[in-house]
Image (cartoon, rainbow, N blue to C red; front, side):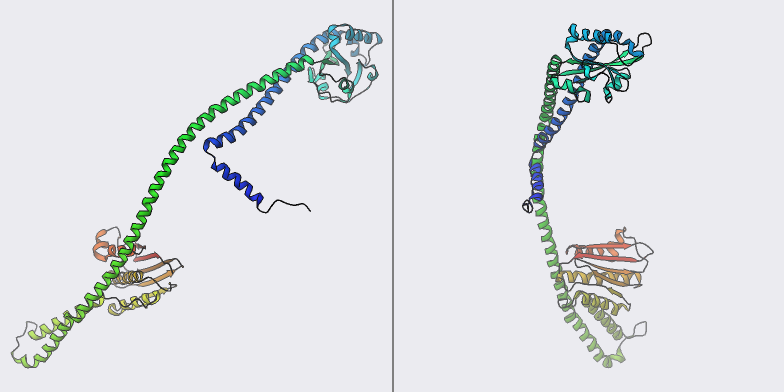
Length: 478
């Protein structure tokens, strides 16, 4: 049983490499990635250039050697236009040419091919008359091209040449019939290539050095540009981080101030409700009681003063007019006192609060409010309860005053985080873009400010002729 890597090692290694990469500056990332890219590019270019140099030098050398050899060998091979073998005299001449000329002494091996891979002549007499598989270079020569390979003796018929252990240039040259120009044979030469090998070595070395020098120069110039840009970016980033830090501090301060303003607004709303409750109680216990007492005293004096009381143009006595005025004033004071005073909200759940607000509107208005309370939180902060009650009170009052109470509907939905309370009607609606209607007719700006003080929003969806829909939305932490 083999022991595997520790659990989590495979996942941590890429993560650590990613963190290491991200920790590098722009210049560091360029130096790391650029060096790999430039190194790969340098190798590809150098290999390509080396291959081109080697191929060009090999082809040029082979072409010159093949031209010279063809001028000497081609006249001796004319009899192959009509037969597949050479006469003993011709073989002797070819042997003499190979052994007694300066170029011939550089030729390690020499073959003459006929079509089908037949060897018509060879410096190795034992393979004359044998057939071998045709090679791509041999096929190219039969098509009229001079083909060459340097030190790549891999064919079956190259066994003897490989055994020599020398760098050889293998060349294939087409031999043509005099007069017709038809290819009658292919001559294959193996020339010693120590000098060619040395020249190719220095040519390849020079090409690698030149490509490397150019690549390093380009990389150095680009690295300098990137390094300069990286330093500029770092300076700007440090300056930006400083600005961001300042802005973050200011945002935190603004958020703290906003929280203070909201808390102050909630406290003001609670204090205002307490003040309104006190004013309502004072009206109920003070002027209302005095007016009620005055009305009772007038009722007591009426039998005593009836014969002598003057009458108004309507036929009623002045005492009756005074008494009716006192009753109307007492009713107005009681209505004002009732409107100013909120019911006790601490012990009411949000659902009960909405139901009580709807009933409190139905009694004096004589209208009906359709309830659609699908879900509601279990409890709310007192400031939110006060805002919620005043929202329902104000919007239902507007629905009654401007829409005659047509289609009044109170809906509530709570998804665990956001509370939405909607009051709608099917009345004539209004144009919310007209500030005069919103400001003076409905008193919605003050309601919007009250809702924003608890972190909520007020949405008004209405238009002339299609009713009104007013929604309160706020986040609730239960």
